[in-house]
Length: 291
Image (cartoon, rainbow, N blue to C red):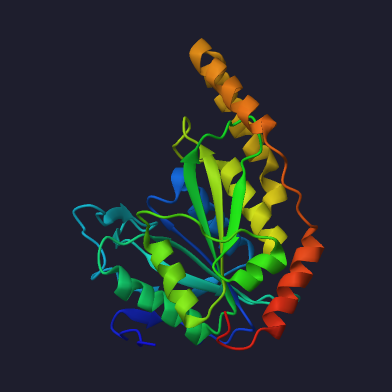
């Protein structure tokens, strides 16, 4: 395994963590309505995560496409902020696994080098598993729970947790490149992707973020506080309702989407306790390097 360049990857703290699980998502094509990154920021805040490692943006961004920003701090000093990919860490003494979180930005350049840095963080921190969060615009009505598709590159883990295996073929993003890299390194990866109503593409979308955190907790047992987002999600749905109800064509289109969703068979999921027990058994019994 190639080692990350020390000039690119800066460690803010020693990764003295206990069997961590890393959860990550990147702004860009696969973060519709910023659902994934907003969910991750909420997760990091909830667990009091602090900076662990940062990837220098210089090699990876075309700054004419993703420009740094300038703002004034509380003392009226100008502060320049660059696109950030900072992994934060939280200890969870009452849980089986500590936590790594990256709510980052998909880079424009040198994707293989970038994923080398992410893989270095995974390996040096001793992460036992990686979970990626994503969001895509789809044919999902805002009046129904937003579906989350869960899959794993590890066929044994997918079978044990009742997850799908990747079937997509076509252009991919950095997360797809990372999945391939970690699979070759023998690190199990779970992907969670929420479908966002394509007619409400802009942020915020608290219902999509809530759905991702709910499914993350179901699969891993990591508490993201999704129950506390119910009121925000209800308010979002009410605002979209008001806009749709003012447009007869839009109202009819949403009814069409509802009929499509209602005709589908509901997915039966095991309980969160059952999934957490199965995941823990998989991780504890998994030989190093076995996929």
